[in-house]
Structures are given as structure tokens and as C-alpha cells.
Image (cartoon, rainbow, N blue to C red; front, top):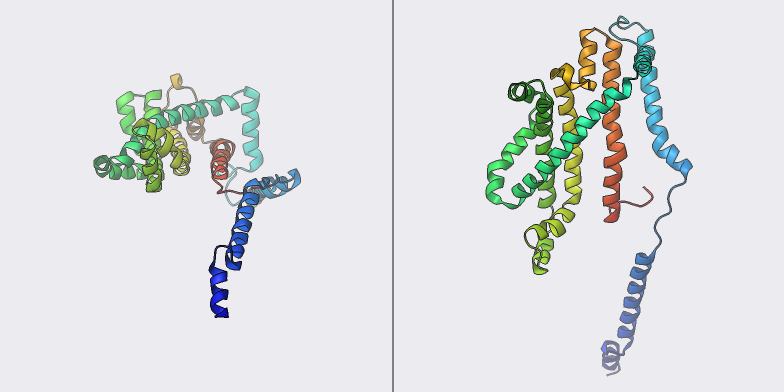
Length: 308
């Protein structure tokens, strides 16, 4: 009887078990409140940032330059076939003295940015259409995948026939290289949206364009950003392929055209210098734009530590 009373007392609303449950619940709520109100992680000191993020790339660059110089000094190839780092630096110095270095870089960068912006305007609605309409996905989805795997340089002869030696031919190659990647990125992002989000949006009245703006795009943003990042890479590669072939005095000189000019002169130092500039611009766009944007999106969703 005593044990029965004890069990009844323990299971009663005011019994010890209830009091313990209330205490546990209160502790859980307090812990969650503390977690919500916890201050953001402090930013890393400048010294640690320099050591952790700036120093390793600089060391890697120094190592590559050192190996390059050693290979040059070992006379593995003739100097005209494998120039040293100082020979390439001299080409940069000559372009600097002539005032053409930034002109060459800006010609290609401006083309790349404009072509990429047009690719976003074309690829985003196309990706949404493919993601949301089953018939369109069945018809166009495989084509987009095939276009993404097609080398961009394959479009250059057709673009020249269509538009001649003009900027139209260059931008056509850029668009055909970048649009499939952007469209496939947003398709992948939409496919990863939990169905609950879409149902909740419909319950709240988000339909049509309102659903796209307030539900689809925000929820698919990580995948969309990945598609944009890949789209820029394809855009830049396509631009260089087009500039190598589409050349005319009226077009100006971009990095691809500069490299082809050095090839005609059999100037290997200039060719290597052009390749390095193309690499530097591609890496700089990623580090200065896409990587910070990606970190900001992931951090806002709790997927990245603030101190990173």
C-alpha cells in the first residue's frame, strides 16, 4: 500500500516526478535561451588570420617559383622554350611601361562580367522552369547536362559563322558555356528544398512569382550560389577560348588575344605571363566575390562558424 501510494504520489501532478520533470524542462529552456543569446564567436586576431589564411598561399607561390627557377637553371629546356620567372617578370614590366597591362586585363574582365550577367538573366528563369515543370525537365534537363559537358571551344566556329569576328561571337560562346551551369545549379538547389517549405508557403498565400521570390530562391540559395560559382568558371574559360580565336583590330586585346599574339611571335615568356594573368584573375574573382558571399550565406544559416 505504501508503495502504491508512493507511485501515485510520484505520478501525480504535484509529485516528485512532476517536479523533477518541470525542473528538467526549465533547465532545457534555460539552456536554449542561453544558446540563443550567446554572443557571436569573437573574430580571429589579425596575426592568426595572416598565419592561417594568407601565409600558406604565399608559401605555395614561393615554392612554385623556386622550383620553376631551379628547373630553368638546370637547363631542362632551351631558354626560348622554358623561360625563367625573371623573363616573365620582364614582360610584365614592359607592358607596365607601355601602359597596356591593365588595359588587357580590363578588356577580358569587362567582357567576362557582362557575359556572366547576361548568363544569370537567362539561366535563372530557365533553371526555375526546368525545376518546377516536369514536362520541361524531361525535355530540356538532359540537354542542359549535355551542354554543360560540351567544351566551350566547340562553339567558336559556329559563333564566328553566325556573328563574324565580333563581340557577338565572343558573348555567344560565353553564354553557351555559362547558362547550363547556372540553370543546373538552381535546379539542384530547388530539388533540395524540403517539401514542407513549399506547403507552408502555399498555406501562407505564396503562389506564382511570390512563391519564387519568398520561398524557392531563398531556400535554394546555397545550391544556386554553387551554380553561379561554377557558371563564372565556365564563363571565364569560354571567354578565353573565344578570345584565342576571335581576333580583330576592332575588338581590342583581351588576355586570350594577347596570348595568341605572343604565340605568333614565338614569345614563350609572354605566353606564360598571359597564362598567369588569366589564372590570377580567375582566382581573384573567386576570393573577392564568390567566397565571401558563400561564407555569408552559410553563416546566416548556421552552417559556418563565425570565426571561420
